[in-house]
Each structure stands twice: as structure tokens, then as C-alpha cells.
Image (cartoon, one colour):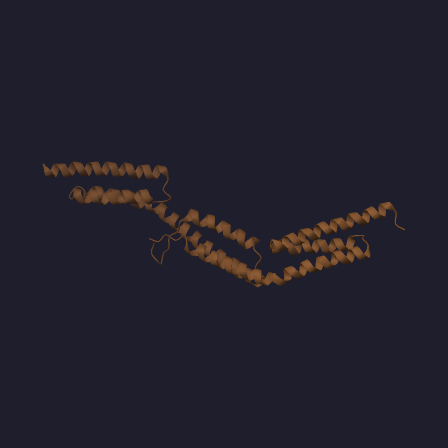
Length: 230
């Protein structure tokens, strides 16, 4: 005959198993498959340790097996749905952030939008339940897309560093042109002003220096233009 303490231990063990199985059933309803099987293994180990009556064990084990069968029955279909979802999102990541005005052979990207989206896609890849055999190819595609944008970012920054010296020399060249053709020089200096505004990686100091050169060269071209009129 069991002592009261033994009855209490049996009841507590059964109650803990009941709570864990209810939690598994909740995860099944929410289709949280990624975490489900890890939790299910924990509950299976708990059954081995639990000291409960044979009848109670049979009842709880039947529920435990039923919830596992339920998840197995829909997880393949669910994984394929998620595969469609992540494949669509990877295509959007690849295409949605390209500047529509850039050449088709040399796409330019809206970088801030791209990296925010890339972070969201990475979380989806980590958290969605997906076919195991597709995971490597999905991650490979994700990294290929990100590496292409990293390369663009790196190259564009290199170009911008060079462009400071190029723009500086261009302004000097138009200063020389102004001696013979101030109208042409003023027109070209307006184009250089636009380039300086658009250059992404110029420091504030470099940008200020270029604008100061443009102002000085433009003022000199205006003076030369007025002299010619006189």
C-alpha cells in the first residue's frame, strides 16, 4: 500500500506530464514545428523518469503519441508552404532594392532598405520550418545575394574616394576653359555641382572643399563673361 507521500509524488509527476503535453498540443495548434520536436524529446525523457501508475501512464502516453502523429501528418505540407514563402522573399530581396534608373548590367541598390530586408529574411531562414534537404541551397542563395550587394557597396565606395580627386581636377579644368569660353565652363560647373551632391561617400570636409572651389571658379567665370560683354 502506498504511503501518502508516494501518492503525492505520483500526482505531481502526472500533473507535470499533463502540463507538458498540453504545451505540446498548443505548439501543434500554432504550427510551431521548429521548437515542437525539441520539446517532444524532453517530454519523452520525462516519461522515462516519471513515477506514475500504469493506467495514468497509458492515458498520458496515448495523448503524447497522438500529438506527435498530428504534427507528423502536416509538417511536410507546412514545410513546402514555408519553402514557397522564403523563395518568394529571396526573390524580393534580390530584385526589390535595385535602383530602377541604374543600367541592367550594373545594378545599383538602395542599401539601407536592402540590409533591413536582409535581416528579416535571415530571421525567417532561422525560424521557419523548412525541408532539411533545401536548407543549404536556400542559405547559399541568401549569401550570394548579400555578397553581390556587398561587392557593389565596396566598389561604389572605392569610386567615391577616387571621385573626390577626379572632381577636384574637373573643376580646375573648367577654370581653364573659362578663360576662352566662360559660358561653357559655367554650364559644366552646374553638372559638377550635381555630381558632388550625389556622391555618397564624400566626407563633409571634402564636399565643402569642392563646393568652395565651384563657387570660386564660377565667380571667376562670371567675371570673365562680363568682361567679354563689355
